[in-house]
Amino acid sequence: MLSRFPNLAEKSDGSNDFSRARFAVSLTFILNGFAVGTFISRIPDFKHILHLSNTVLGNSLFFASIGVLAAISPAGRNAAKRGSAPVVFASTIALAVAVPFIGLLFNLPFLWLSLFIYGFFQSCQDLSMNAHAVTLEQKSTKRMMSVFHAMWSIGSLCGGAIGGVISQLGIKPIWHTLVVGAIIAAVGIWLRTWFLPPSADIHPIDSKKRTKRPKVFWIYGLLGMCAAIPEGAAADWGGILARDTYHATPFLSTLPFVFFASTMVMGRLSGDLVAHRFGTMRALSYSGLLGACGLTIGLLINNIYGEIFGWIILGFGMSLGIPLTISAAGSTANKNYSGIISSAEAVAMVSGISYFGFVIGPPCMGFLADHLTLHSALFVIVSLALILAIGSRISIKD
Image (cartoon, rainbow, N blue to C red; front, side, top):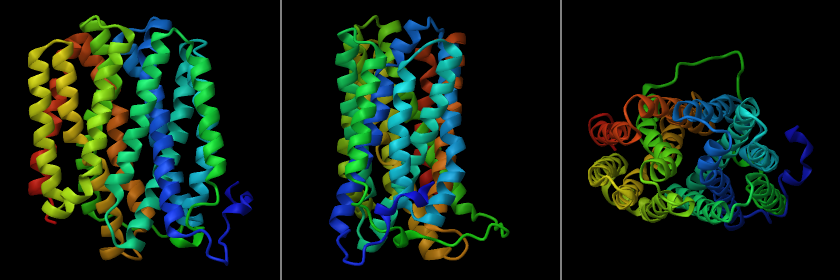
């Protein structure tokens, strides 16, 4: 399928230059974040339209996470075999088609199917654009992954804020998601020739040879998981906590996520400088400690304003987790494990382990919320942030 995109072939005149590729990657991160923010903003509506309990909602979100996990291996291998650029384009168009399905809400089984499809193609785009971002970092010898992820947070912030307004106005999810899908498709087609040529990051794959993955990538992945679960919980359950526990309006219920996404943007815009100044693992340690302290204070206040405060500080704290672990994985693969694992495969592996947090997070939080309370269950997030803080200091040296 990917070979059918001749516009993505390498150009001999060199017009597909670095600055255009950097802009294209930045905008792709924004698109991916916008799709996720749109989805998150309508989760309370999914719950109320289909009359779901917290446990059923958590189990339903599990299907999106399964889709994310299912995409990791094929996306990583295709990015390595064909170059990341064709995979970015194909997955962007596929995501544009998948997004409207989550707004149909015919019944619960259809929701599960649509969430799986959405999660699969969202993950394909996510992994391939991260692989392309790693290639840009390596060719420029500059840190830029955190800024790219800031663009993702800007997209999710816009998607969440706009979705909150649209939800408050009572507009049905199907019309909302149709417009978002059209926007993603239009921008994706516009950017299709702006990326680096496929040859920039093609890595031959020997399908018969299977090598043992170095343990350093498992460690990066587990640290990323400790950031992914809190990030996912803040996104998936912030609106539910605000609306069901604190009885906030639909618009006010989106504010914890909007503020969370805003501080994620600020943290990620400065993340490359912070990592350069303090080192990757020390930066991760400080951010994990900050997130744990902020969320604890917010939960102890135990009202909508405390939730907003906790989400604000958690956003700062979790902002560096995934971008720094992904960047470290790509860099480590190229510098220390060339010929053993490609940067695209390393990114896919670390992302896969990290994103497994999005698989286990929703059902676990839903189960704990129904058997304890959602407020009490969120203290698990505090523990994971502390594990990130401690683990990043003792596991790996910069």
